[in-house]
Length: 114
Length: 111
Figure 1 (spheres, each protein chain N blue to C red):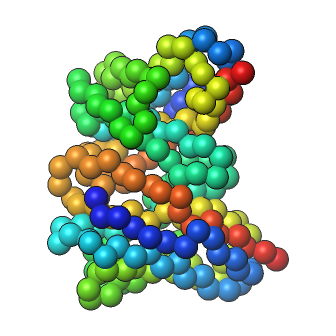
Figure 2 (figure 1 turned 180 degrees about the horizontal axis):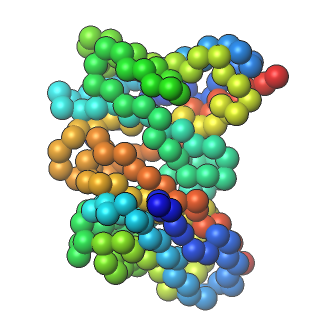
Figure 3 (figure 1 turned 45 degrees about the horizontal axis):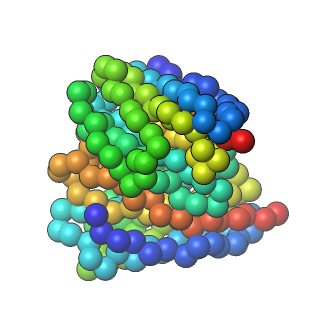
């Protein structure tokens, strides 16, 4: 039981390049999330998927797109990377979407945009 | 979700008890109080959750007064490995809610 996995762990991009961050969970959770965390800051929600087949914007969605490929997988795409997107990206999942339900986080992807 | 306020940072020494208080004046009737812990270079992890009075597990205790407008996370006899950021969140148990982690409380435990 791996929990929440993310790939890649590290990535360096040049401005304007695109990439997709992958996330998968094996806990049969309905809800999945993408957060970003800048140095010394808390987590900010980028996009979420309350259930399979649905996605919605969080606090900071500009410059990102997401796909809930199936119940297990939730990917985050940067179409044209910018230095302001340099951050650590965390994927998380929970059984249901209420805050009562524990969110399980992946190990994170450290992205640097030059 | 109810807005929460917690100290930005706290310092402690090994072996001491640490209490981190979170204010949530506009907590709703069906809201629960949840604390997460984040070690450097890792994602947050759930440590404890409660609705009222006291909850204790193998990691921490959570004290919630009768008016529920605040809560206190208690870490007994901290060690260096308890150095982390601690987030207090408040939200209900129905419907979808977007968690707001804020900046949390940065706890530094020294030898």
